[in-house]
Length: 468
Ligand SMILES: Cc1cc2nc3c(=O)[nH]c(=O)nc-3n(C[C@H](O)[C@H](O)[C@H](O)COP(=O)(O)OP(=O)(O)OC[C@H]3O[C@@H](n4cnc5c(N)ncnc54)[C@H](O)[C@@H]3O)c2cc1C
Image (cartoon, rainbow, N blue to C red; front, side, top):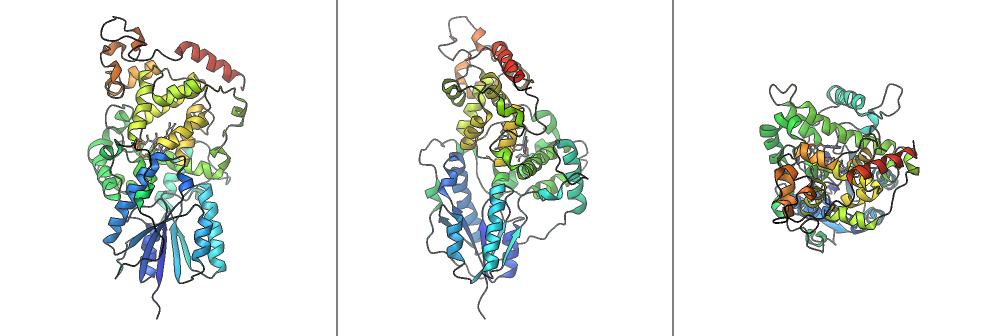
């Protein structure tokens, strides 16, 4: 009897626990081979993620060794081409987990058709989500557009209706390769070595994701609601790059958080953030046009300004507003930025500089290790005021007051903007007012604000009036 081979197409699911495709493949076949298709073109605008991807592939390869499973990396810019070649063989079954992005789900259908036409067995399994997005709808069968009722419904649906699946991974008797041409994960690393700090900040992989989750649950979750807005401390989980790359399934997070004793009132805020992730994935699938355009059509007429000088100052963290500059420098150095600061720098770009949110979205996409199509576009449209259930455009963050409120001793800004360390704390968020002429000279040691907050605010509100 011929031995059965199960091929598992790994995309954003570098995990053993709750990897439904891997688990089913290992039950139904004598041998499992995992493969990743590296589409270089897809990563052209996601430099930071190349680093995470390369490290994740290396770690997952070694994790799978314990199961005698090989992970092979194929380099090819066209998925179609890979599968057209693959189906010529017809000696395997194919398994993969879903990614909840319109392009991936569309390709799934194309691939299912191809495999069916060749009589090749396949299974498409649940991806990294609590609820399949199309299972959550209002009673009139239309999608929710407001977060709170969405999450109330989605949470209940998950608890009441979603079955718990056994996802044990069985070991291969012998490891086996399937593909002839493979590349090393080292080929994926960005060519320009700006990512020096990433190695000391992050350790991509499932075991580290689980450690981080446990540490967060044991030490931080109870203070999450209070500390999540303070960028100088570890108040949030910093799990986002692991969740994005599927090193941690959100069902595992849900399960572990719900095991906490006496948790009432302590975990809801954190779980609601997992809820925002579910909501943004649901939104981009029901309204895929929002990936490239304003969700709220009236913003199509917004008088955005093109100002390369301002845009470059923002990207480099040289706007003269310490909290904005600290955030942008944290992003560049570490591939991550605190959520409160993402909102501040985002608001500054679209409201103080009147620069289209799409340019900010692109920059984040290139620099974030946790870049997620759903969360990034939703985050930016929320900040700009044109998204679903978004912050109103006329609510304009004052970068001085935001700094004083959430970084009142200046710890965060002094870490990332060392030029202002000599400025006394009471002026740390408006260093241009410190004029003793000795140890710090505004405009020389650190830029003066590129726009005046009050003037920018008035200009933004009058621009907004034009589309009301
Ligand atoms: C302009 C802007 C862009 C953003 N871009 C991204 C992005 O590309 N990728 C990304 O994962 N998040 C993005 N976010 C959301 C949020 O900033 C990050 O998820 C969060 O900072 C990650 O840190 P954490 O893991 O410590 O979060 P925690 O507070 O510990 O939250 C736990 C998890 O919940 C999810 N989550 C938290 N906040 C949100 C949110 N507002 N929307 C959706 N999911 C959320 C994330 O998966 C996160 O890891 C963006 C927010 C803004 C304002």
